[in-house]
Structures are given as structure tokens and as C-alpha cells.
Amino acid sequence: MILNKKPVTLAEAREIVEKLDEAEELKHYFKRFTKLTLEQATKLKEELQNLNNAKLKEEHIVKIVDFLPKEREELNLITADANLSEEEANAILEIVKKY
Image (cartoon, rainbow, N blue to C red; front, side, top):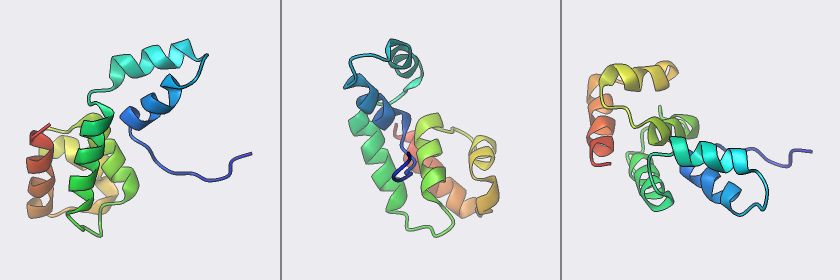
């Protein structure tokens, strides 16, 4: 039974899985594909949330943290339904560039 549903970054999911005694395959997956530490992912997530952009949903922010898009085209794939302006997209990419 699912009690609640919340998007989490790969770094957050990795932290959850690391606490499990089993799930070695998942641990290997997260080690291979997680680009940021939990601290870095949390900080980036907060910075993106601080933009206070109503178009950015929590799901968008989580995927931006996971994929770290470098170019507008990559960002547009993640946020296709958000219809970001060039200025909004550039603000996001400037923050991501630091990571």
C-alpha cells in the first residue's frame, strides 16, 4: 500500500537504499548513475526552488538535479510542459552550471 508519493532525486533515493541491508543491485545502480552527493543535490534543489518560478514543478526540479542539463535543449526535454521563457531557462542553467 502506498501512503504518499513524493518525487526524490537520485541522491535522495541512494541515501534511502543505502540504509537497506539488501538491494545490492539498487545500490550499484545509484552508485553508477548518481552525479551529485546528497548535500550537493539538496543545495541545488533549494536553489532551483528559490527561483520561485510557478512553472517549475517539483518533478521538473528533481529531474534537473538528476540530469544536470548543460544546454537549453536538454532543459527543454525535462521541462517541455512548463513552457519556460529564454530568461527563465537561462536562470536555471546558470544555477546548474555551478554543479
